Image (cartoon, rainbow, N blue to C red; front, side, top):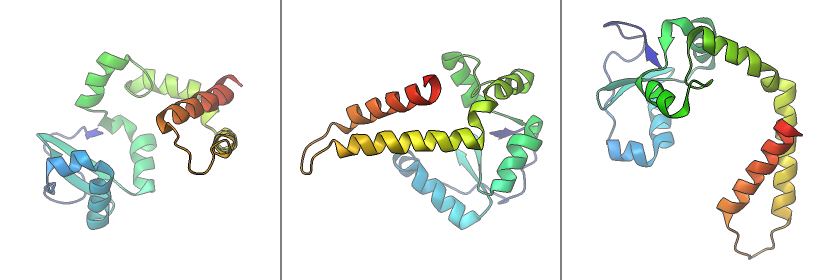
Length: 158
């Protein structure tokens, strides 16, 4: 998310932390972001090319940004590019349109529903893995695609 701030940075490190190398970041983004979080705490700031990137690690701050203060933030240039490819969906939309989409999808994201999805995932995963025999070679990409299709079919279409 890009802050809607002219020349002011949010609280956090005063200067952008240099990434060790862009290559390392591309090769292991989760590892690099985890290192930043460990070293900088709740808010990390770095540059990726010419773009300023803020990594927020505190659940309360994330809630504040995404729910209470969302109108102070935009999704940024990459989301605008994605909008051209993906259309105006929940991930790419903003403002009132985004709010209406969130409201429509919210019932399927309630904690009770999420628990059901977890049970469905665990059930299908267990069934699938029990069909594998010790020492056999499995096409994991094919298996995971099938698992995903089964979970989505059961969760969304029942």
